Length: 173
Image (cartoon, rainbow, N blue to C red; front, top):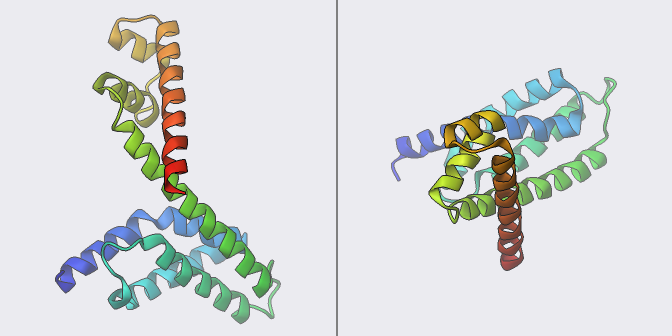
Protein backbone atom coordinates (compact mmCIF):
# COMPACT_ATOMS: atom_id res chain seq x y z
CA UNK A 1 0.00 0.00 0.00
CA UNK A 2 1.34 3.42 -0.94
CA UNK A 3 2.29 5.71 1.94
CA UNK A 4 -0.34 8.28 0.96
CA UNK A 5 -3.03 5.57 0.90
CA UNK A 6 -1.91 4.32 4.31
CA UNK A 7 -1.95 7.86 5.69
CA UNK A 8 -5.44 8.40 4.31
CA UNK A 9 -6.64 5.14 5.87
CA UNK A 10 -5.14 6.12 9.21
CA UNK A 11 -6.89 9.50 9.11
CA UNK A 12 -10.17 7.71 8.35
CA UNK A 13 -9.69 5.39 11.33
CA UNK A 14 -8.76 8.25 13.65
CA UNK A 15 -11.82 10.26 12.57
CA UNK A 16 -14.16 7.25 12.72
CA UNK A 17 -13.07 6.26 16.23
CA UNK A 18 -12.86 9.68 17.94
CA UNK A 19 -15.92 8.99 20.09
CA UNK A 20 -14.59 5.63 21.26
CA UNK A 21 -11.17 7.07 21.99
CA UNK A 22 -12.77 9.94 23.89
CA UNK A 23 -14.89 7.49 25.91
CA UNK A 24 -11.90 5.30 26.62
CA UNK A 25 -9.82 8.22 27.86
CA UNK A 26 -12.74 9.73 29.81
CA UNK A 27 -13.32 6.39 31.57
CA UNK A 28 -9.85 6.75 33.06
CA UNK A 29 -9.76 10.49 33.76
CA UNK A 30 -13.37 11.40 34.52
CA UNK A 31 -12.81 15.00 33.46
CA UNK A 32 -13.91 16.43 30.11
CA UNK A 33 -11.20 19.09 29.85
CA UNK A 34 -8.39 16.67 30.63
CA UNK A 35 -9.92 14.08 28.33
CA UNK A 36 -9.99 16.55 25.44
CA UNK A 37 -6.33 17.43 26.08
CA UNK A 38 -5.24 13.79 26.22
CA UNK A 39 -7.30 12.97 23.12
CA UNK A 40 -5.48 15.69 21.20
CA UNK A 41 -2.14 14.34 22.36
CA UNK A 42 -3.24 10.81 21.44
CA UNK A 43 -4.21 11.92 17.94
CA UNK A 44 -0.80 13.56 17.51
CA UNK A 45 1.01 10.43 18.67
CA UNK A 46 -1.12 8.25 16.39
CA UNK A 47 -0.11 10.46 13.47
CA UNK A 48 3.57 10.50 14.48
CA UNK A 49 3.54 6.70 14.71
CA UNK A 50 1.75 6.22 11.40
CA UNK A 51 4.60 4.02 10.17
CA UNK A 52 3.66 1.48 12.87
CA UNK A 53 0.05 1.30 11.69
CA UNK A 54 -0.66 -1.76 9.56
CA UNK A 55 -3.64 -1.71 7.20
CA UNK A 56 -5.87 -4.72 7.77
CA UNK A 57 -4.99 -5.03 11.44
CA UNK A 58 -7.46 -3.84 14.08
CA UNK A 59 -7.05 -0.12 14.65
CA UNK A 60 -8.71 0.25 18.07
CA UNK A 61 -6.39 -1.97 20.14
CA UNK A 62 -3.38 -0.08 18.75
CA UNK A 63 -5.04 3.30 19.32
CA UNK A 64 -6.18 2.32 22.83
CA UNK A 65 -2.67 1.28 23.82
CA UNK A 66 -1.34 4.66 22.69
CA UNK A 67 -4.19 6.44 24.49
CA UNK A 68 -3.45 4.45 27.66
CA UNK A 69 0.18 5.58 27.61
CA UNK A 70 -0.94 9.17 27.03
CA UNK A 71 -3.28 8.94 30.03
CA UNK A 72 -0.49 7.49 32.17
CA UNK A 73 1.86 10.28 31.08
CA UNK A 74 -0.85 12.83 31.85
CA UNK A 75 -1.47 11.35 35.32
CA UNK A 76 2.31 11.27 35.97
CA UNK A 77 2.85 14.83 34.74
CA UNK A 78 -0.15 16.18 36.61
CA UNK A 79 0.64 14.18 39.75
CA UNK A 80 1.21 17.31 41.78
CA UNK A 81 -2.29 18.52 40.82
CA UNK A 82 -5.38 16.97 42.27
CA UNK A 83 -5.96 13.98 40.01
CA UNK A 84 -8.72 11.43 40.31
CA UNK A 85 -6.67 8.30 39.65
CA UNK A 86 -3.29 6.81 40.34
CA UNK A 87 -1.27 4.93 37.72
CA UNK A 88 -2.23 1.44 38.90
CA UNK A 89 -5.93 2.22 38.76
CA UNK A 90 -5.55 3.76 35.30
CA UNK A 91 -3.95 0.50 34.12
CA UNK A 92 -6.81 -1.58 35.54
CA UNK A 93 -9.46 0.64 33.98
CA UNK A 94 -7.61 0.66 30.66
CA UNK A 95 -7.46 -3.14 30.53
CA UNK A 96 -11.14 -3.52 31.34
CA UNK A 97 -12.18 -0.84 28.86
CA UNK A 98 -10.11 -2.45 26.13
CA UNK A 99 -11.73 -5.84 26.79
CA UNK A 100 -15.16 -4.23 26.54
CA UNK A 101 -14.21 -2.46 23.30
CA UNK A 102 -13.07 -5.76 21.81
CA UNK A 103 -16.34 -7.37 22.93
CA UNK A 104 -18.28 -4.48 21.38
CA UNK A 105 -16.44 -5.01 18.09
CA UNK A 106 -17.32 -8.73 18.15
CA UNK A 107 -20.96 -7.84 18.78
CA UNK A 108 -20.94 -5.30 15.97
CA UNK A 109 -19.51 -7.80 13.50
CA UNK A 110 -22.00 -10.47 14.56
CA UNK A 111 -24.88 -8.00 14.20
CA UNK A 112 -23.69 -7.00 10.73
CA UNK A 113 -23.52 -10.67 9.67
CA UNK A 114 -26.96 -11.40 11.15
CA UNK A 115 -28.56 -8.37 9.53
CA UNK A 116 -27.34 -9.67 6.17
CA UNK A 117 -29.40 -12.84 6.74
CA UNK A 118 -32.69 -10.93 7.01
CA UNK A 119 -35.07 -10.51 4.12
CA UNK A 120 -34.85 -7.20 2.23
CA UNK A 121 -38.19 -6.11 3.73
CA UNK A 122 -36.99 -6.79 7.27
CA UNK A 123 -33.67 -5.05 6.62
CA UNK A 124 -35.60 -2.00 5.43
CA UNK A 125 -37.77 -2.07 8.57
CA UNK A 126 -34.73 -2.27 10.84
CA UNK A 127 -32.97 0.53 8.99
CA UNK A 128 -36.06 2.73 9.02
CA UNK A 129 -36.78 2.16 12.71
CA UNK A 130 -33.29 2.05 14.24
CA UNK A 131 -31.03 3.91 11.84
CA UNK A 132 -33.39 6.60 10.59
CA UNK A 133 -35.51 6.75 13.78
CA UNK A 134 -38.83 6.35 12.00
CA UNK A 135 -41.76 5.98 14.37
CA UNK A 136 -43.91 2.85 14.53
CA UNK A 137 -46.75 4.89 13.07
CA UNK A 138 -44.60 6.00 10.12
CA UNK A 139 -43.54 2.43 9.44
CA UNK A 140 -47.11 1.18 9.65
CA UNK A 141 -48.29 3.87 7.26
CA UNK A 142 -45.49 3.25 4.74
CA UNK A 143 -46.21 -0.48 4.74
CA UNK A 144 -49.97 -0.27 4.84
CA UNK A 145 -50.12 -2.23 8.11
CA UNK A 146 -51.42 -1.59 11.57
CA UNK A 147 -49.10 -0.43 14.33
CA UNK A 148 -49.62 -3.69 16.24
CA UNK A 149 -48.48 -5.72 13.25
CA UNK A 150 -45.35 -3.57 12.89
CA UNK A 151 -44.57 -3.91 16.61
CA UNK A 152 -44.91 -7.70 16.45
CA UNK A 153 -42.76 -7.90 13.32
CA UNK A 154 -40.03 -5.77 14.91
CA UNK A 155 -40.15 -7.88 18.06
CA UNK A 156 -39.70 -11.05 16.01
CA UNK A 157 -36.83 -9.50 14.06
CA UNK A 158 -35.09 -8.42 17.28
CA UNK A 159 -35.47 -11.91 18.77
CA UNK A 160 -34.15 -13.48 15.58
CA UNK A 161 -31.17 -11.11 15.54
CA UNK A 162 -30.44 -11.76 19.22
CA UNK A 163 -30.47 -15.55 18.70
CA UNK A 164 -28.27 -15.20 15.62
CA UNK A 165 -25.79 -12.98 17.46
CA UNK A 166 -25.60 -15.45 20.35
CA UNK A 167 -24.88 -18.28 17.88
CA UNK A 168 -22.19 -16.27 16.10
CA UNK A 169 -20.50 -15.31 19.37
CA UNK A 170 -20.62 -18.93 20.59
CA UNK A 171 -19.02 -20.07 17.31
CA UNK A 172 -16.17 -17.59 17.70
CA UNK A 173 -15.22 -18.76 21.22
